Image (cartoon, rainbow, N blue to C red):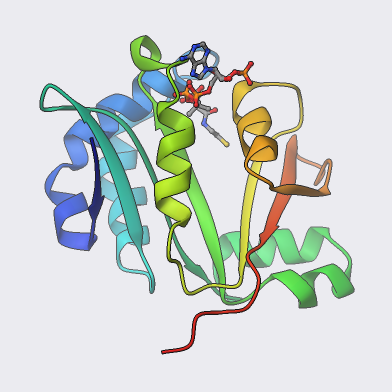
Length: 174
Ligand SMILES: CC(C)(COP(=O)(O)OP(=O)(O)OC[C@H]1O[C@@H](n2cnc3c(N)ncnc32)[C@H](O)[C@@H]1OP(=O)(O)O)[C@@H](O)C(=O)NCCC(=O)NCCS
């Protein structure tokens, strides 16, 4: 079961999300769950267009993904804009949906949850363009994004991350 959470609902389960974050990223890093729950998530939850999707199994959160509408002047957008050509930056950066995290608890991986979370995260978004950075080497996450139609915009930004983009067609008019 996948729920769509707004700012308040996401912050209310920050510790649970942090546990998933630590499990998912624990294989080759030492992820800081406290920093995720008390700094990263609250900062991003205040951004325009924040959306988080969470998958539960028997009541427990086992995976989540989130993003928001990115703009110039924000750390990630400016860092990426400075690393790519001005033409590419003009085309892709600003008003894009920025996928920040996708994480599935280790024991729950390999069952299609990550794919389902990404599909739910991207469903019905108003943003025409979407961006994310991921590993440059061959791992489940980049394979998953490519299967879902994301294109590699820049294979290596210079710090071990690749830039992926998804052009979602015409924006939804409101
Ligand atoms: C990336 C991540 C979220 C994927 O989650 P997941 O739930 O395992 O994703 P899926 O199950 O949809 O797909 C993973 C693999 O399982 C396979 N799979 C899915 N359902 C399956 C099933 N029923 N039987 C067998 N294999 C299956 C998929 O084909 C895919 O194979 P591949 O890795 O060879 O391409 C997870 O690996 C993770 O949390 N990784 C660490 C954090 C991370 O890298 N996050 C992204 C940072 S950019």
